[in-house]
Image 1 (cartoon, helix red, strand yellow):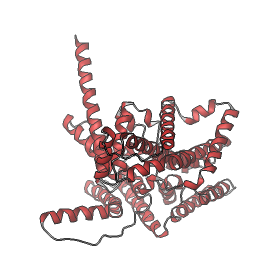
Image 2 (cartoon, one colour):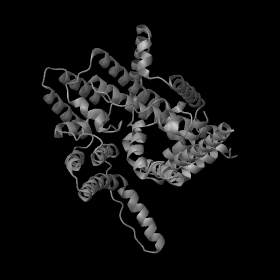
Image 3 (cartoon, one colour):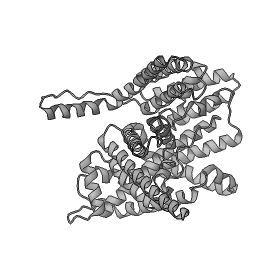
Image 4 (cartoon, chains in turn purple, yellow):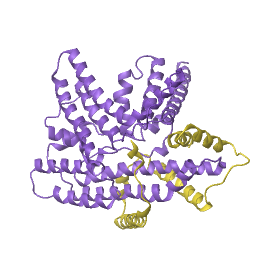
Length: 362
Length: 105
């Protein structure tokens, strides 16, 4: 189901009603859970199984990880979760891509290998929910927070329909505690939620789709060499489109959650006003860059393993971040460019600080 | 603004289906080929310029605050007008709707 559809409006109104009727909190949570599975099923019912599998496996692995003392068993459990989640992601999302590149490589070496192109469907939101459940198991490995006690709370955390399909990527400590006590929107929260929902839809439907998409698509789908002005306008149109589309979605998600009484984290904070690239990543897709920072960059060593290693870690993080966005080398190049920009920024700052220090020492 | 410029360059790779398209677009952006095509209507271009300038200005004004904070300080009639405008434009634009971009992920 998508936020900009009449189906969703009906769904949402029914949810609001049910959520504010005098049922017990547990019933309301079950209600939200079933609704979230319905929301997902509206896209393609059988794929709920994948979502459910990821949820169940990580719940039990997480629980076991928290109490397990044996170092090797812990690593084994973590590996199970990593393989389960990333394996699913790799197969569904990158299966065709991996096969294509493998075929290319093998043919280069001399073998005549031409497999049929597999028809793998990409499950909606798989990049998001695998990352969500994965951060839970990794947190459990490092004992960063308490394990979630009930399967209901954990499933609701993973499947919560506002953030299920395209984020914000929520961490367990941000959402699960909100499930402990009955949550209902106050009048002010409801108003704010509805306003955010309207704003998000406006950004997506009016700005991104009606005004910007057509020109962006025309320019990017064209096979001709275009004039400089046309090329630039097309790119600017896309910049606007992708922001309004994605930030619009996140705003809708936050608004819908607010109407139900829940608080989701910010995902965009005026990124086009960023000064410098670190600032940009603190403002664009905030929950993803925070995830990559905490679960990829820092475990790799962050900037604590020496200068050379910190540059390498930045690039690895950006390359994988790029790849996460899609199964195409263009996304990796996108990531690489951001990596290069961050390198340049880091280097400039390093020399600026050195000059400053030298001046202070005089 | 410089940051925005560089970010735009990255979006070329993000959106383009393949490298030949990306490269073609990038070279067009920095060099006007003699046989280059003009594809877009002037009206579209004007519209996009206005939106882009509006978007960047809005970001700059809001960079250290949040929408909800601003809304709280707004007088109720101004909020009502803006909100109604948003809803009206929303209803008028319902025809050309498509899937969220990030749904590919």
